[in-house]
Length: 293
Length: 332
Image (cartoon, rainbow over all chains, first blue to last red):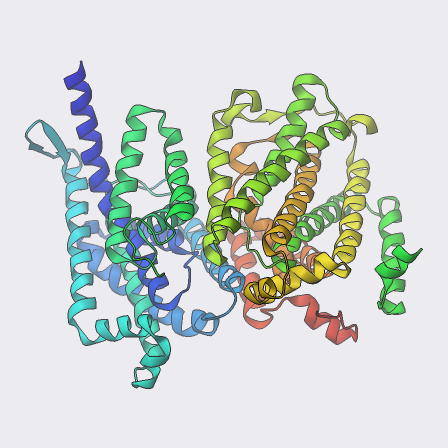
């Protein structure tokens, strides 16, 4: 009885960890954008859903696996994100929060309803061949799709880390985030770097969408939920911190899976929002963020 | 008399005359308008009222709340629950509704302000409380759970229980909107109003010159929450149903913020202008959407309209409109 329960719990935690990696990648996009240009992307969940739809379309009409179409989707997201920042968002940097909020809300409304207009309100999922495959790890069973998605998410996060720590552009972006004025003084093209950052953040969330579609089907109505989820994750992990976003993703992924097992699944978001309130009040820099003071 | 004088103060006679004429027109409107236009006007007044309530917090005191659905939802649920379970009419129930929303506002405000959350962080706290409450109501039997709470539809006019047709609800929301307008004007002209503006512009400087910042912010959120709860009560009895999924939804919170932001934050006429423009656009786009038969097309037009407004009139429509009309609303 108890060993059965423990096994179920371990199974739920594993499942949560795997989903949590994809959550983490999604939140990473939000965190990078905020950390560098101090703009809260209220259209983040909507971008995620667009990524899911693109991967679904690739699978449905071109028979390309989401894992293969991922690089192309990420590239498209990078280009669109870059353009979006250059054209729409750039003038709003440093403006009052409610104006940024309204701008990105308008973008969010456009994105999600474009999905609705093109793909309709029905839920769309991909049925891959590996759908029912699984790996056994001792007594634990790992879904193949979930494991592949999680590994891909970790690989992308690693690439991102290499980009920010090793490349010249990555280092310049971090410099601009640390000290905007000094970055201008030493001659960095901050406007271009900001656009680049938004592109990178968008590519993260687009890639996360392509991975997520292999785990759950998509509807336009998921968008608002993902926006909130991404907020919860980055605040809990620490807004602007890369490790924070990933750890926050794992934490929320596990808590959702465990809440689904122990109490009613519909109560799972109550835990997330309760945690969000506690972290905001007691540790606003996040569980893994550095204190400013 | 001195109160009236203070209220009208330095307002130009042109504005006072226009307001008087507008009020008379609104009072006789139900006799002139058909069912459809009356329902549109009701929506306009609802958004003007609830926008005015939100504006007290954001426009006057500078605190961004994206969780006002919490107060509207609590207000509506409590008044509707008292009526459907115990037969307690909304005029008595609204005291409980306003009290509960005021307490909720005080809790959110105290925690947020005491722990000095500002800007986006404070906004996220308000969202978190609203979402938390949504899930709680999903599982609360008394409030009907996720299945919703329903009031018996009854269109025979019964003012005591706020049952009746659209005309009754029209006059109630008109009184609320007009009352909130006068209240906001009085608040802005008061010492408290000046304190709020000082806090909005620079909280640290206000604190330094002796403004009781925490107390003033608390008063702002409690007044704002209480007024929003009234809107919630009205909403519940007008539509006769409540679901946690919609009553506490983030979408509900967002729609409350739109009219004042679009109209002009911190101005008295902003929420009204915003409500007229947004409701008008909403109706036009609904018709257009029905003609085009594409799902989501209405919202696409709506999103485009918001985009254009925020890009070209980021400070809102009213300050620009007032300038064009030669009516300068004093920007303190």
